[in-house]
Image: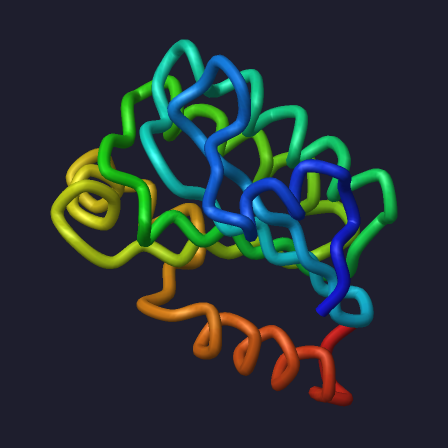
Length: 140
């Protein structure tokens, strides 16, 4: 997968972006974009996540996966940002969140987001589901 933003390289080198507790690596493979997020998603870092989603959406992907398995705190503002990302891609593409564990999966399930947003345990499972659906001749 190749980087689609200038920040991804910083995240791959294991450094946090200046002034935040969040790193985001953005990768594209065909029409699929995967944002891998590490750190805390709270009121202070949600704008950074929103910017990364906007950047990912600028290429009009067929699918967007946000991997938050390495997130240690997911606030209500972070969950709202995930809902917004889902709403923004829904007309043209598929959206999923990779969340596994008490800091990410549990709060999303507690507020019922798992009924609105597709959730996966791994990026591989999400990517396979996205690929399988795109090969289905009965889907529009």
